[in-house]
Length: 449
Image 1 (cartoon, rainbow, N blue to C red):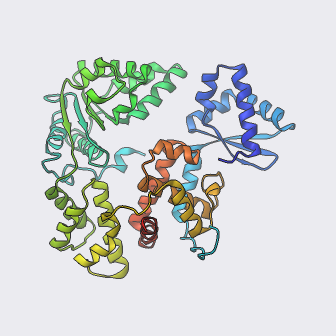
Image 2 (cartoon, rainbow, N blue to C red; image 1 turned 180 degrees about the vertical axis):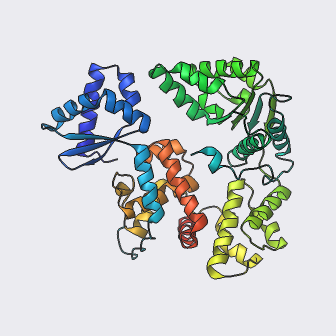
């Protein structure tokens, strides 16, 4: 990414701090800070989150002011913001943005319990590829830590592991509203213990994780290779297990294949039940299609359902995408869904792309379409047109390339949570805005052709 004068100032300031303070401490609090605006007199620096923002203001603001004065040769007003606030601002800009006019051809272009309350056992479609996992989660939800503890679910992304975790939470809370449940991702656990060690709040961290009735950790493989984190999780696991508290873990692979992971953790993960979730078989895919169409109020003939189930095989997310695409086409054109219509609308699902889709492919298409350059999309400006194109680019790169969320974050010089927020904003708008949904569909089709 192009480095501005303000970026150079910040780098010089951080290098100076590392010379006078513990470099690891500087990197913890300021390593992911970014300049978001600079007008020659005032420089705004965004911390990674609100917690780090407050720490920077309390501990480092004076040093930053001195450092920027030395770098710029004059006194600058230094404002510390947070990426959480910036994310919310971008979310609001994107949500209210009108679809930009397409440029001519020759132009240069909260609570988790509230968010996931609709994930239940009732709307989880069961088949032979996921029956054991579903039954185990239901048993855990109705009788925590009685017969199955720990429960370890594994399988490729997009097959319903997280759905089952939240279904377990919702059912357990329905049975016992007072049950104390904690859900985190492996990354959140890792970041939590690092912050706790740095701020000398490990006792508070342990209090949070070791005084629950049920601990659910999604993507536990994230702790692999992190010695201190594995040590802390080992003791957290042992404490909960000895107190007969329920533990549920998910991963993309079984315990024995998570490397590098300490053997004592692998052994403990294997103490209870290990259940895998495989890609859905034809009958299950048909049932999932049927359920998704019912939720959208669609009437899809059986021959169309059979056609879809035979051709879309990878994961549940792709199934959801196909159904929503048919719904958008039917809604916009008032056309009845038939086999011929489905074949036309979903043809890109059933063929290999003529060329490999890369981030640059997506940037170039969006630049041609909206007149916003790659540098602007990956930069720091937040005009309506740029934010709109930026969120579109993030979503499309996540959907159409093999880049992980972490790598996409590096591409846009933004953290993991910002990328997730942008992607989810696009998905949310697709569900409620048929015109926007059609726009996304057209772009995807152009990428495939």
